[in-house]
Image (cartoon, rainbow, N blue to C red; front, top):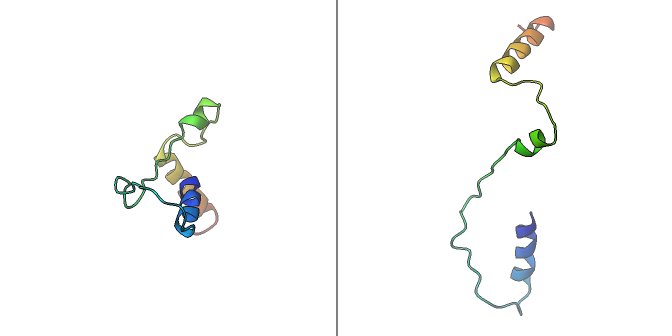
Length: 67
């Protein structure tokens, strides 16, 4: 977000000159998600396993008549 905000003024102000290296940047940025910070501050996930999420989803769908 901040990098994108910085790029706009550089492109729109003709007096800004200098070498700008962007060739080493990936064409599509990688999105990396981690729950490490949440866990460090004490957050606990309700579901520890993906199977638990599936099981509860199926139980709910059966209970409301979707399955």
